Length: 442
Image 1 (tube, one colour):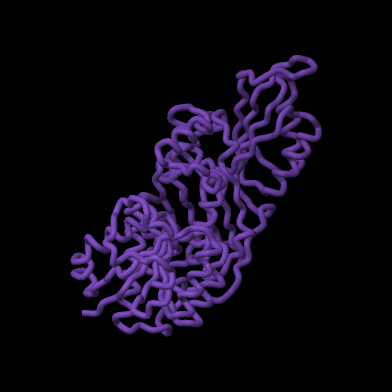
Image 2: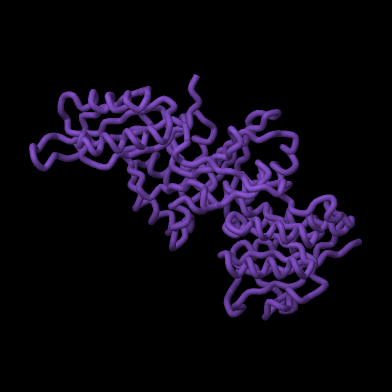
């Protein structure tokens, strides 16, 4: 029986989960794979603390070279986080002939081109199932289960922190700050939740899925990203009246030779399957030209769910090593065509829009807004004009109320021009709220 030796760099929440599975399910993995996977060494900078899964002394590495320089270690699992250090680690391992498994979505989204081209040059496999959606096997589904499909679009709820916050704001009618504080206390949000709530975490993940689905490299700086930090409970409630539920949605679409990749708060029809994904759970909907719509649902983070994906990559690569599968069969694990994908500019987006204008409660305001919309070829689908008083104007002490307009499909460029003109004409008294809507029109 072939023995494959594994080294882990980084012994945090996920690292502990990986070690636990490799050690406690060793016999199960042998039974299912026919390979003896041996956890040889684990490196962390500080062993002088309690770990959820303690290791015997012989498995502890006190220097990184005990893993990178050990010729008997076949696979290195990188679980450190960040970009610069893991990039140096991964490239060093690749050059030394070691296969790599990682959960590092930021590194792959921003430096994936360099890493995968180097891996191809050296005939090395990179496993990254755990980099997107934790325990959901979405990478393998795209690479293998949907290999016969041209992917038409991907919709994903890819960040549990933001999904928890938006779920609580909707169901308990609470404000953003109080729910964020609760999420931190429960461990659903980091002490510094910036990358979650500003959309960057989800953007890293959808960039990886788009690269995999559309066969090329993505310049991450071209991905449109907008977070939930400015979301108001009023808009969640008004959207609900219109039949929509708010989610931080990661979107990838292909059309006219370009790839649309974006992350932003999005209203979905409340009966849509993704609208029903609540709390810290993740879900990905993939539409292929042959299979139609498919949906993958599960825990997007956590020690054992993410570790489960890491171990699946370890087993997959171990089989390749044991069977002697070489670079002519698979190298990048991404099925890339060595091309750079062209990303659609935000000004060229076409979708529906929810717009909330804060206006004086006087005659003629709606007519003025409608006139500007007509100028820019924007068609109105629905209007909500509330008597709810938000404030009063400083000069005339007129009531200030919300005016909500739902549009039919329109150009982002025209929408932005219309909003600018409406605000310059002082039809509104506050900045306009814009939330995009994904809802196919009949």
